[in-house]
Amino acid sequence: MVKVAINDRLWLYLATISDGVILTGGLLFALTQNLVGYGMGGEENGSEK
View 1 (cartoon, rainbow, N blue to C red):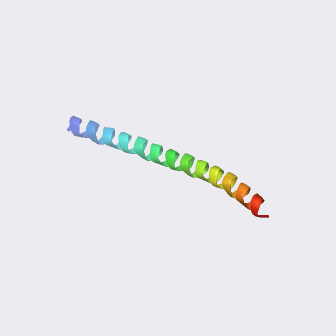
View 2 (cartoon, rainbow, N blue to C red):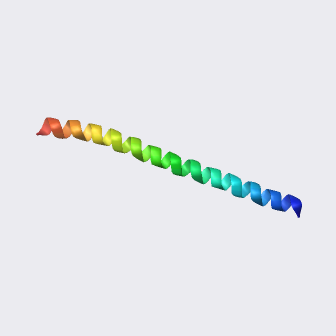
View 3 (tube, rainbow, N blue to C red):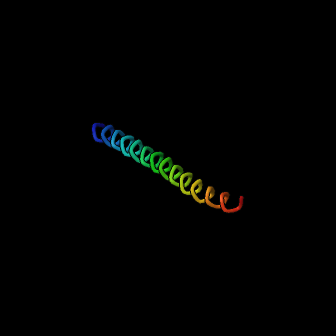
């Protein structure tokens, strides 16, 4: 029973960490994509106008 409890806690801990990494990575990726897209879009819009 003790091993099962430790295993469940370990999996919950790992799942929480992986979720945090995915969320953080997703936010950073979205932020960089927005910055890059904004920079490129700004240049394109500037040259068009």
